Length: 255
Image (cartoon, rainbow, N blue to C red):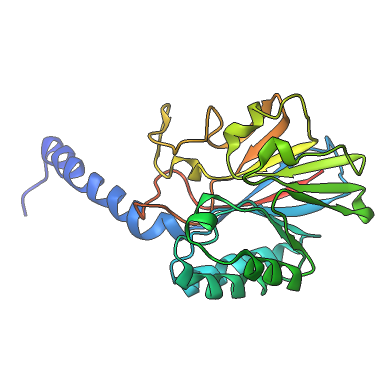
């Protein structure tokens, strides 16, 4: 048996590494859920909830069930969703069925694909209401037990925002770039998605490509003119079904 030389070893590694990374990006990482924790309270907060976004459900019921199971096991007080449940209307009934399996009130605001899919928003309203939550399209709801107002921003944007109705306000919106365009309004926390974290992120470079509307806020925590912003990497994928160094994310938030 001939001994492999260092040159041959490096050559084989150069050939196999791209294949391994490609397989991981296509078949493993897109459904390899991670749970991140974000504590804005500076200590022990009095409100603990889950944020997820960009489901982009396309019929993978096993993965969707894993998402729901993970959220339920975290036992949040409520759940926030910031848009893009589906890309095609034919997947909406199934996706909304998964929303209703979440054992906590789910509050959601729409993303661009929720409009582009032409799903009837009353269907969203019924499904989110069935959890004890609400579908917030340019409107808000107050959670008295947390002295917290949840504001869902959609197409009207800044024009729909009113004076505060609670001592704490949390803004749900799809496009993170809007955090710099709130015309002087500030929130205790802003949650957004849309970027998918870029789906493919390289060391030292970050996201290779992000969609329009992300601005400088592609993933994680930022201080913005509108207040503290957390951009979630999302659950699903768009256009290219790959993720690399950017696993799908469920965030546990404490305020």
